[in-house]
Length: 277
Length: 277
Image 1 (cartoon, each protein chain N blue to C red):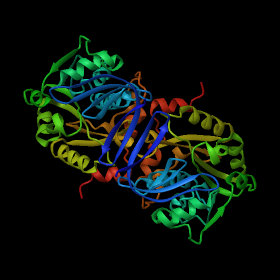
Image 2 (cartoon, rainbow over the protein chains, first blue to last red):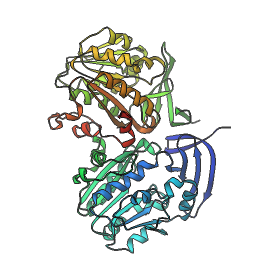
Image 3 (cartoon, each protein chain N blue to C red):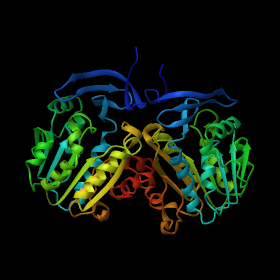
Image 4 (cartoon, each protein chain N blue to C red):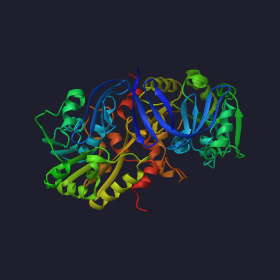
């Protein structure tokens, strides 16, 4: 018998992948969690039926959500990851020697637990002494911390279910207040083929709050359309004005200093989403 | 009843899309041709079970295969498209006023016929007076023409079936000889996630023949992995050294002068495929 997992990325389109084994499956307090073994992408974490990360392509998302803001900030010491219970963003944060403390606030402890068990290459750094893991509501955490973090990354699921409030304008204002005076924030903001309206809304909301707002993209084969976007809001430093010749070499598979700049050069129909009409 | 078309992009992974109608289906002399109506991507041309182009995302491939070489050449007058029977590349070629003649050599006349009928937005310029359509073997055409074309684009299917010989090194040598002294050639070279070895081979083969060899990428949601590559070989002009401030504005949805340069900035694991070890 062949088993295939299909994610309907829209009502009428999706990806399908042959699985060799279901490693774990449960309804947590917040969402349906499945950990499956696929032939093409290795171990895959699926939340509410949507691919969150896989062994094979996880490096793209985690490198791009992390190194772009951290190399834009001149001296990031305290970093917050909201969501991101798989630990991949934290692993990349720890590659920056300036970072003294990396806080992970994930609402669903089960994501952390099963990522540690089944995705050790991704979650393996969550026990590092510089890391503080809190199983808590990121929305509340943001509103209880002021002027504290140099970089905040929102590594959330889609704007349905537990992550819906992480796409509200009030949340971005909270992030602004939680950042230090040179602070930078990045949020995943979905893909332009199926959710152009969301990108437009997030970009406009962030732009109302942050002096510098930029959109950048990367290619993630297991994510809808293969093109993913991140929206970056910054109080002072512009990611496209970073002197990329000064970025130190890092052990990465996707990110490079040249790509740090090129990722902000958008296809025309994507650029149009960031322009006020 | 719901009908879904599934393309296995590898033995164990693929995309799946709901279809509302099969417009045409036949075994041609060369391949299985299906024209279907999908909810997500509109009309879709499928050859031997592989998505070739769709109404919704076709502009990416056609703009990127065309404008990058044509804006790298200082004065392209005579252009050849090998394959590309849907006519999308030709449509983009005609946006360049310097072009006096655009020759399309497609081996399968049925692709042209049904693209004209069902994909008029893509194939609609094939009757332009500057265009010459030949239903013929591109491999033979290349070997019968010397020092004739300023730009040659290979818009082929995958290296199985009728297009297999279009990925041979001898074909690239033939292209070199068919080009004028400032000639430039581009071929689609698949995706780095599933076919890194092919990219490596094509790049190395082209590099053995052309003084300038470059790889660039774009995002095509209906193509495997969502990231597509093109390999460019040039006798003289380097696409990354083009003065992009001098590129005139063109009616495009993906290509921009800034992207002309940024498309050559590769993710690290892709860049590694272009480096001799």
